[in-house]
Image (tube, rainbow over all chains, first blue to last red):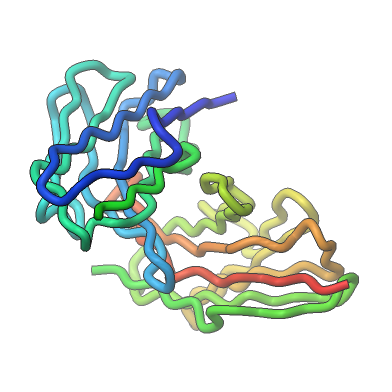
Length: 114
Length: 114
């Protein structure tokens, strides 16, 4: 089974702090994604990566950056957290081969910025 | 850009009754279609997917969905729900040209009542 893990289930940070959210997958997937989930808005793509050291902006990249130094790990960085970044953050991974296309999700990190 | 509309934000349903969750997408180009389920305090889990072939797709836990190209719809159905089907359901679409990048609908919360 594909396993995607996220470093924290719950996180509370103060406004202005630098926040790191870590995601690790164990299936050698090429693609990794970061989403935020808000009620009524579904999941919105923040950033994604098709390869190590590669990154592309998603639909809502403002206020976020990412890092992918190793294939299995994809980090989301909030340079200076703000209250409007309080949300559920979900990481996902998928393969570029095998014709499967679906994404596999981690359990999520609920971030509260006070 | 793709957009996905889930017409019902909440669907209350009695146990053992049928349920249909509606999903419409915007693009007329070739697409891949997915339904995911999110149980409370968990990540997303794939229910079923349409890549090609038969327009009626069967998934896990007795769910099925029908792809209708002319109406750009991918509605999800289950003939008899259980209490354990209480969850949030997300429809997602990927343009074949966009590869693994998914666009999600806003979600439908299903509450199964005894």
